[in-house]
Length: 629
Ligand code: WTA
Image (cartoon, rainbow, N blue to C red; front, side, top):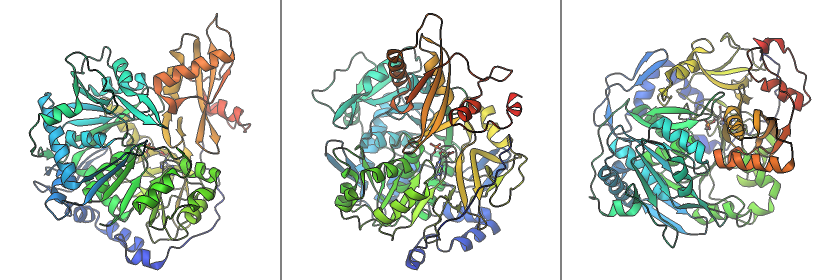
């Protein structure tokens, strides 16, 4: 399919106050980028040298396409850099983490407190038999213990795989099985809008026949405390209290795995993206410092859940490796009222605020009177991630929230990339609708299907041309799938996004080039929703497409062919929605279901979602024959 279409690029440019650039870590973007281009290895080495290593590397990068090793033979522990370094370097009593519960509860941890909790829980995990290299699944609500559990795994060299608490039992089960998790850490329940979300019950369903699971650790935060059954269930705090308080950080090789995080793909089940210790630490530290411009007196609030890559990189590992103060909140943006988040910013003097366009568009709908009731003058930097920040949302974010004084960093990146890849560095001219230019250290371009750069104004595929430290190393149990990322277009890393560049090298993201849907900033594979639907007794075949939605980015529409003997009805639609909810979770629910008699297919029997989508949106079908290869 030809992606070389013309895109009209015009629009405004915003220039932040010159003091922003003067006081920033990144300094002048162009000079910094030049410096990187001239001496790439030295550039990364300079950053890595700001962190503490148990043993220094032999070489910065060993690259045998498509396999990279960064900081070879270096030894480290990421939690040493997130905790010990600060505890012994003047930040012992600094606030590391502020947590706000759905019902207004509050917990604050200094670096010293966090350090001690992590060590205790790390010892607790050891007492359950967890060893270096074992996989631990974390399926928890957004509570401090979720982060403590992640860091405790990293402390002892266990590989964590965090599953977002909004996923249903099938999604959880497939991840536990693929990752061969030895332990599952969960909580009795999460809280959402004042209501309990029963997590433990979902775990109970998910672990049936998951033979790898030896223990389930349960955080009991509700009263009365839920009963624990059988020997395999243990209490989160009990294993902590009976454990030693000191736990030395395990010496990890730079290329030892740190975590697996699942992300939706075009086909089949979610892919287990594998990140390793050294490069990931350097990439997230660097971008937190230079793209968010994090300083010692900042309070950074990233509204994602640690269950997504955004939370891994910019709640946990990036800010903590910088010694920053993070704020996390279990709350929903409009509960108990649409002022909830602005109140938090006012109350805690949040300075760096990082959220998704879908949330910004929702706030626009509520109206500016809500943010205007609060003093947001502490804000310094605004961030966006997950989907394109459309110009209207940019303008609103910039003027109503940032009062025209905060740079907006619209950060384009992926689970696979581990760190920001494109954005507009603070202090540089901002162009609404454009993510921006490559982060210094990243070589990105927009190319045609042969890998040739397309001229400005012409759409093409977004690729990354050179390896970077926090790139994924493989897809768990599927290295072939990993190689595809680097073999599809030339020898470049193909992101799966369509994009266009302007004369100044700013890149605008146009959307996915495959069948991954971005619903409210969350990545959902059409194939996953289809397979959930087909597992219902009434469904013979299903096709799922994303329809543009003014609020959510994409909304999910499902086309269903029923099995003989089943009749289309509104009741059946509700059943199917419920079925998807139980299987995959509320984020994957179709907002529309249509029963049909047939679906367009290729000769080999693949459903042509593009054709269905074009038809649905009333678009020109284009050259359909090329799709029938
Ligand atoms: C999309 C989230 C436009 C994109 C960090 C990408 C974006 C996918 C942006 C990765 C952005 C992310 N502008 N699109 N600033 N950020 N995306 O793995 O399609 O959950 O490929 O990582 O989200 O989603 P993931």
